[in-house]
Image (cartoon, rainbow, N blue to C red; front, side, top):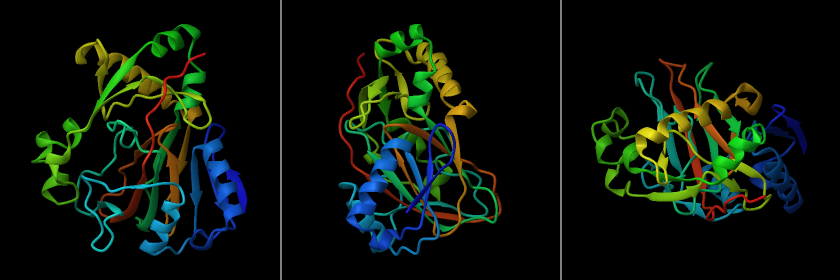
Length: 279
């Protein structure tokens, strides 16, 4: 097993490993790399759904997605699909998966089934590196804040007539009733590293602030966190598996492949409540 960094801030590509028959020592090494680099990419895998699920279970309990269409045979696996004629992709804004849950998802494991000949990459940004680069005054202010997150505006009744709902890629909007309050600066539950925890997709406002007052600061956090120095980019091909740490990164799917199909299988791993970071 070999490890190759994707950028200075985060990400690693892993080679010389078969995830369908991974040993205990290989898994321990993979976990260490995951905690250190936040995003791991493994290419040229030949995983069937049972292999995907077995690999996911080594990390923790699987979250059965309430809102994404599952595969026909395995409810543990959600489909992330864009057909050639569809205008909108899923995950096209910077976000953190399941930040609206009281115990947000630990990780997401995305496996490429069908990809366009070019495009459809995924961007990731390190929320730890972004926090580290802030001024002391900004760090102190943000450490004193909590923020509200919700699934309602993204997946709920207001989205009934959205393209993704009408086409069956998303649905069950009655299940989009999750609301959570999290620290804006969290301590990673395992490494203890400080990281920003707010995203413009699911974070609605800061505790004690109005939505209107919150938006400029949320936009500022996103603009800062997505500075190129804090990012890495993952290109896809069938058989590529990428796993990311939702407690450490935001991500965004790029929509630049109109006229081509992109089908991914995603499994989400349950997490724990997020503690606030304290000096």
